[in-house]
Image 1 (cartoon, one colour):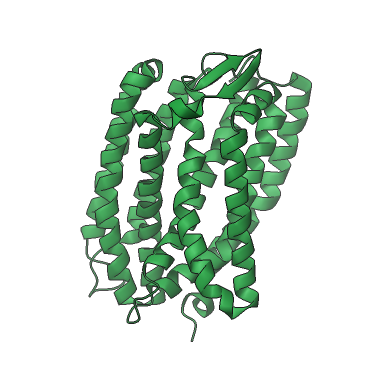
Image 2 (image 1 turned 135 degrees about the horizontal axis):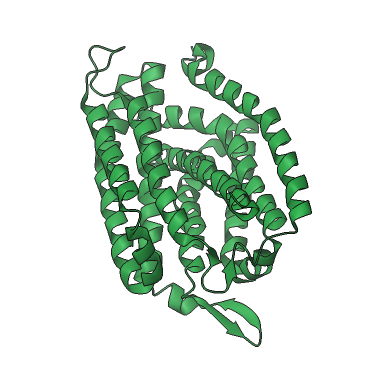
Length: 343
């Protein structure tokens, strides 16, 4: 494996981890807003209990993505930084507002309701804006004017291809977060919240799969170079659909630990994460060697080999330090009954 492939694999790994964790985080904020007036259900409390400790951990990975991009591929930094100035600025503003309310809500109780609505609204908008980076890298929305790359906003916001990605991001956010909150509700012993989130998963799951078909359809007409290459990885795409079916089966099975409950949401979460991994692998491999089609490749944007080796060593050391902490945090968060089932 070449240095360029190792670097892009590290970057894509950070993106995948952040995509999964952020999807759960943003979706929890949306479901908290949806069920805020359900007095007989604790669905909002369950969502806020999940949201509270995870948002800070999630933000670690978006920092890692930006640092890895600028460190490993400085040649792509100028183009992406210039083209993504508008959507990137909006994302940063929304993240700052959301984070501020998440902090203030723990200090002053009168902010709790505002937090619920802010986190719910931004929980839909931010994923749609984040995933919009992908169709932009397909190349059809970038114009070069007097040597300066610019994003054609009119073409972008009238493109079915861009909206199919946004729709997929929103529905995937709701689907994966509802699965995780169903599992979390089961751990907390809240049957009513579990039934609500399991129902939501049954609704949003098929819709997200349908939107995936819409992405492929629009890709065929607006980014045919990528569509044709993705078809070369059709076994990975079929495997992705198979894991989606496995998640549906898991939600239908009787629970091993709760005999009066139907569904094994943790198995479904694992299956869906594997589904996203298989699909993202096919997409990522098809996208190579381009970072931004057709001008920027991983070879042309790559840093100096000596710089790469030093940076890669530092990433390995950092990962070895942080990974045990993330594992400990997750086990504490999901299994500590003092937090999962507060009195």
